Amino acid sequence: MPPIGRSLGRGLLAVVSSPALLAVAILAPLLAWLGLHALGFEGRPALLVDVLALPPIATYFDLGTGESLLGIGPTFLIFTGAAIVIRGVLYALLAGMIVESLEDGRVTSWGLLRGLAAIPTVIVVQVLSFTLILGSNVIFPILGPGIGLLAAVASLVGGLFFLGFAPTGAVRQRRGVVETLRRSGRAAMLPGSRHLLFCGLYFFIALPVVVGLAPGGGEITANPTFVGWVFVLAASVLHLAFMGGLAYRWIVVEPFVPEEAVPRRRTQAREPSRRPSGRR
Image (tube, rainbow, N blue to C red; front, side):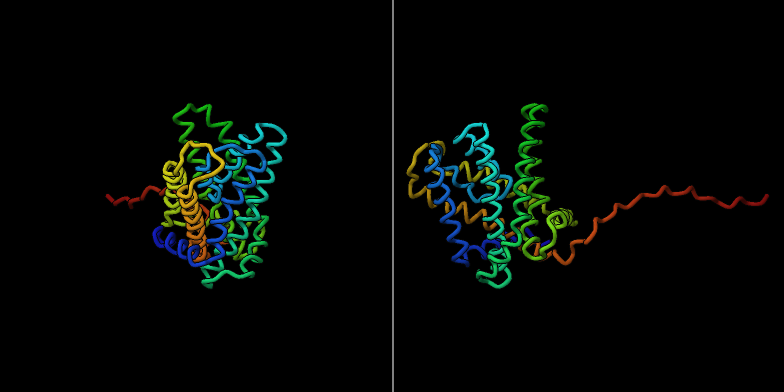
């Protein structure tokens, strides 16, 4: 597995060198903000920094936005289902574009076509992220505020840890959904990958750092400032860079991902040594 710094560098280069990917980083937060306001949403523009976040952080954004907009009820479930489908399509297309940018240094319609084939897998990833958040909100509060919070964060990092390679794997190999998810987990478990550190670094940057430094903070307004939009753009590029870093890591280790789960070694009890008895 390539080092974390090199992975992020290659991911960032794949994004900033592609006008199409930069256009997505600019237009996606703007269209999301306009669409939410058309539905009557009143919230903080600072939340836009996580519009293009990787799941399950993006799932948290959708759930919080839906609850603020519609409350808890049937319409909330409809909003959540629509958000899962929209994100599944968008992230699958982004995966195809990023993979093509890493492979050929450009983005064409071929990358979009490859991304279309990954839509079922990415939608399943979104559903699993939603299920993970729902389960953590129900189970972990029983453990108390301290341990429960740590367990919830660990579960979210674990979700990205095991599912983060799935979109790229679906674009490059076009296997079944279940097999793609299994291979994503096997790649994450490769020895010496430091993949857990990569995922933990992303959560640290995407939540306390990016959200905490967002201009405007808790200000509620329909017109974000120019500085706020620039920060949102930078955050969106950062999210896509981490997505590109995951894609680059998968491309490098793809030949070494085992087809089957690696069996655990069984430790056999050592028989006591038998010394030949000496003759008297």
